[in-house]
Length: 221
Image 1 (cartoon, one colour):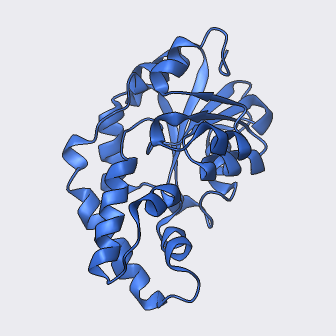
Image 2: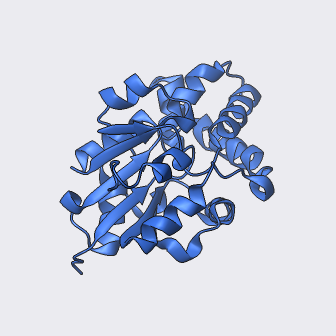
């Protein structure tokens, strides 16, 4: 289906919900339990990669891959403790509802699925504005490959040239750029402006509230 509308594709963790540092602590502890001392700043910069890629990125290709599943499961269990209180970023829900009212088709592109995705959607509290969700389970390769963004656009039938992708990590910006979509970065995930711009961000905002306040003349005008 080909739509004549415009699509605003959003990453979720660190972009709409303030979860990056919760992920950092959960990954740090999962690595520690498996006998690996991985510094938190390194984990922070890897957040946004799919689980297996994140482990490979931090431990290297010569690691004992038999541990991968246990480390990922450890992270999942530790992070799951926060599901009932995930904090939305300022005006995240309001931003999605406003874009929906303005005629944008809003799509989420996230590596989260199942109970985690449900918890994130509860935190955002804008289900009526979200047309579709592209999960990492639906694609062969996660970010920074373009597939998650391409799949999100396929779900709503909007071509890349009529879409904007909003995210908080270099992996988001690289994925959006490879999908030939205009990329907008937000700083609320803790990644520096220069890194986002270098990875393909056309514009950078502080957080969803800043993006909402700039809608009239900003990247989503």
